Image (tube, rainbow, N blue to C red; front, side, top):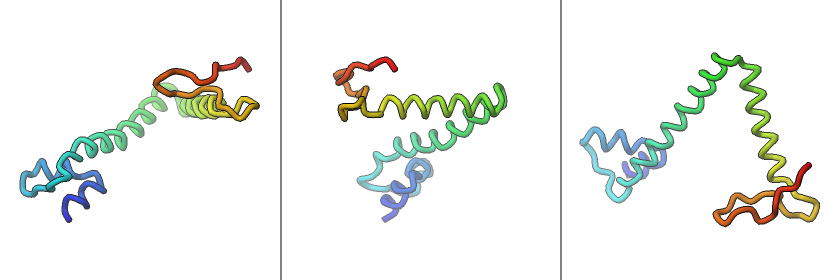
Length: 98
């Protein structure tokens, strides 16, 4: 039961680091734990550093520009198809100029 709980909370790397417990078949989730902990720390830290360097207004403009770009790239092209598909084979429909 310890393995399931630590894997669901992304704490299995800390349990394995202590060396006191074995989480059994879920011991491979240590790398996922490290990845999720990185994203929990890196995102806010990057936002803080960018806001400090360029100002909060510039950070908000960059964020909202990214959101708008994603929204436009995923919007239908009038025929019900997306403008761009990020698949491994490339675009399914060529991007059209606005």
